[in-house]
Image 1 (cartoon, one colour):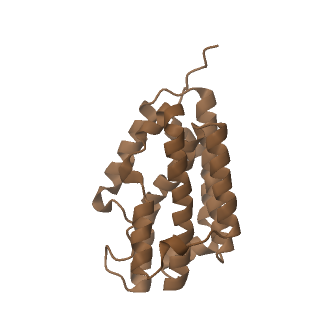
Image 2: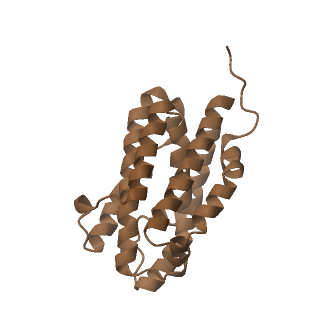
Length: 210
């Protein structure tokens, strides 16, 4: 049976249908402290460590899923953020290899693995959340730099990976996603994946104390 083509852009659906999940994640106390530059170096490094584990799990899921999901071709090597997280952790004197998942992070990693196994197209939705967060992270970086007395490029590589090219990089990603051949079923899966990532990241922040 031929599936019905998606009538509206997938990126528009992702934004609209995950708006409440996005707002809840951003509303966590830890996220608010990040924006205001109120985290200590230790608190910030702890958050970076958990995000490293999440990104590693997602990047592994992307690689496993590529052969089964054509839409994942839009995810580039430049969007591999774990290496930037490792650089930031090294700046704060944290051995990335010694970072252990808290309970919420472990649950999210398990969810990422399950989603990838069940429907590899949904991995695009997972990635959408973390890649899209770089838009807001540009502003968070300013708060973190002020709060921790950092200069650009010092301990903030994860938050500001593209510098002045952020808008252009996001526009390129948006265009790439919407240019793919989507079915309604696949778009539904991507939306559900994005919701799962927003929820999981929110829970990670809560366990870290916010």
